[in-house]
Image (cartoon, rainbow, N blue to C red; front, side, top):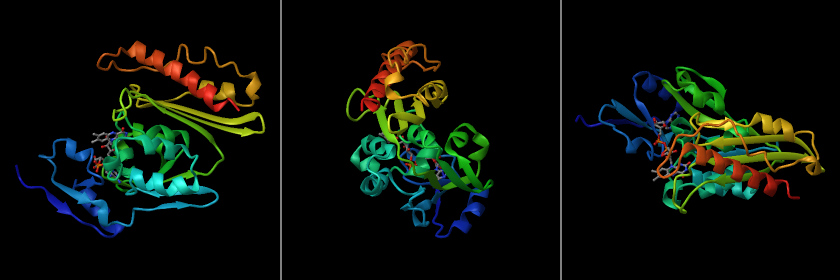
Length: 268
Ligand SMILES: Cc1cc2nc3c(=O)[nH]c(=O)nc-3n(C[C@H](O)[C@H](O)[C@H](O)COP(=O)(O)OP(=O)(O)OC[C@H]3O[C@@H](n4cnc5c(N)ncnc54)[C@H](O)[C@@H]3O)c2cc1C
């Protein structure tokens, strides 16, 4: 095996040329280094680029692609402790891994057990890309469009600030386990009236599912008008079988946990 050549750009305008040569971005390395690197021509270490930051204004939050899960939990945890990203990323993987796993690498990699994709899709987050394609794109579109991934680099993630109430569930058997699925629920209320709702399930065969029917059913209702029992039945989401768990049983569990989450978030 030839040795892998590393590149260490310090300015963003050096990156498109490197991507054009089919060199591969390396962020935390936690996903990349589990795979086969023998055919990779070279790796671009993103660690010297100015992409490790978390910025907030009254209207929005922007996170640099090289911010780690731990950076996000620490920095946003102080300013927006109720933000769903804080609770989701704070429970992901383990402490040493959260110090390495980056936001940009995790959106690009988007494994089925991801703790970041559900919250970002629910928040309608957008990424900024440079390289063969540049501009802002919804995270939801990027994950499903392989054309956006070729020779591009995610530089940042942005989402609007809103006073969401949030609920996050990761379905694990032991504390350090890949979640079989995750549930993100965001609710915005004006006194007792729900004016916006977002529900995203991950872990299914389509990477994520936004439950727009249920979102619409909740919107413009007062809490007292909502009948939660039965909402989780007959969800139109497909799961692949996992060790000791059939797809049907996983879908049943999602339904149970979804109703539990709705009861929790609507209990006030
Ligand atoms: C044991 C273990 C347990 C884990 N558990 C969880 C968990 O519970 N929840 C969870 O959410 N995650 C978990 N992870 C992390 C997840 O599996 C991925 O490893 C991680 O999200 C990849 O992020 P990274 O920064 O390490 O990216 P890297 O490994 O550096 O890169 C991953 C891919 O993204 C590309 N890439 C990197 N940065 C960019 C960029 N800025 N723009 C475009 N492409 C880019 C790379 O070329 C590569 O293809 C776990 C990882 C391990 C090893």
